[in-house]
Amino acid sequence: MIVLDSGTTTLEVARQLPPELEATVITNSPPIAVALADHPKVDVAVVGGTLAKDAQALVGASTVAALQAVRADVLVLGVCSVHPEVGITVLELEESYVKRAMIANAAEVVAVSSAEKLGSAGPFVIAPLEELTYLVTEESAPAAQVERFRAAGVEVVLA
Image (cartoon, rainbow, N blue to C red; front, side, top):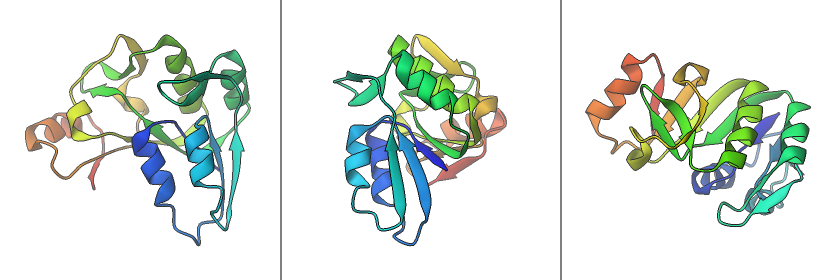
């Protein structure tokens, strides 16, 4: 059971899932659902909610309720900003509720982030860094920035 959060980076993760992968993917992202429609062995479930048009993500109370009923093996979390001291943050309040529900019910949390989002912080805190199992970012991420996350106890994967 995989939960794929919305976002451009998680959409790319969805596109890269190997064809032999057998899994159920739950997402709040219509673009991710469409991207996985032709995957031969992945079942796709989309949680309902209100469409946040800019983010192309479903949000709201019904989205949170649906996610609270799911126990995921892995959550691939898209992040707007991640900071070594502040933690994982976003710019939108409704999005923060959805991401908190995803994290609360996942055995492993894999945050995917482009290098420019490292060290930034938004107004709505989702979770402290301790909630992350892995942080995946670009190989081009500044070494000093990556080291700050490793020093905070996060396992960083450069891809």
